Length: 205
Length: 165
Image 1 (cartoon, rainbow over the protein chains, first blue to last red):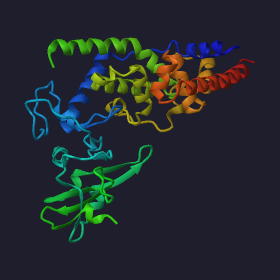
Image 2: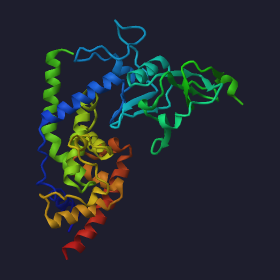
Image 3: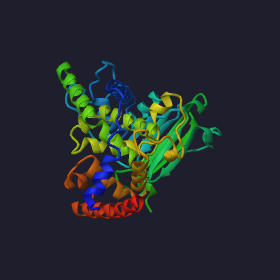
Image 4: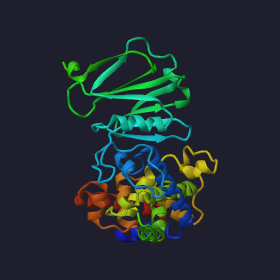
């Protein structure tokens, strides 16, 4: 048996298999994903859709975006990698992945987190730590993961676990001084908790 | 987006789906033995393709995009939506009824190939993509595609002969 016959037999082995799911179901599901992504500023799935694009896209539904770009609303909007993706999980947790790109608009991330039910502060270029201790519920509110294959820094957050008048305080910084954050830190603190913020330039050794 | 443009997008996607859905499902069955799970994964991948159609439609091989997305999708919305539990160890479950016992043996041999060789077979033979496009999709050289295809075919040929005898 030659190679062509082997490959022909392989192709023939599944020739009777048919996908019979209606295209309407597929498109309904895809449209829902599109709406969700726009609402949450999510970049997910097989393509890395930048959150800035999702926010800037005109929405077919006519809804207002969850967050608006600070400038250029009437004209073309410059698109840059958002530096993060945000996804709501089936169990109502929220997954925040830091892609490693520069985060130029921390307020957009902050607003997207708020839309997902997470009161947060996002600081770039500084490392902030609470002057007092972190709230004891922290372990139940967030955890971090760095997983293969791409080893991106990921926060899994449980918004319902956050006590009243609390917020997550994120720091995105690079001790070596580059524009792209290399380190990420987060603390669960009360809204009025004093923070000690050190500029990344002071962290260089 | 204007109405005419939306309708054209919908037509394009529906046409793509009708043309490629069977091939994509067959390709995913190369790695996922559970027929129902494979269909869920392909459906989810097509839904994602529609969600990002403006980009996927410009992909050099949209069907390959769907297959790779399906294979990389671990959580099936379709399954959750039907209140079913995602299968663990699904490789043993629910074989496709349309596939005969001999063909199932062939597929099992295909599934035992190294992942890259299996991907090349799927893209090159089942999705009928040319070598350059396969190389582009997988991010490897055309020469490497040819090597993977050669090795995969040699492995399968040996196993097929032993099965037939």
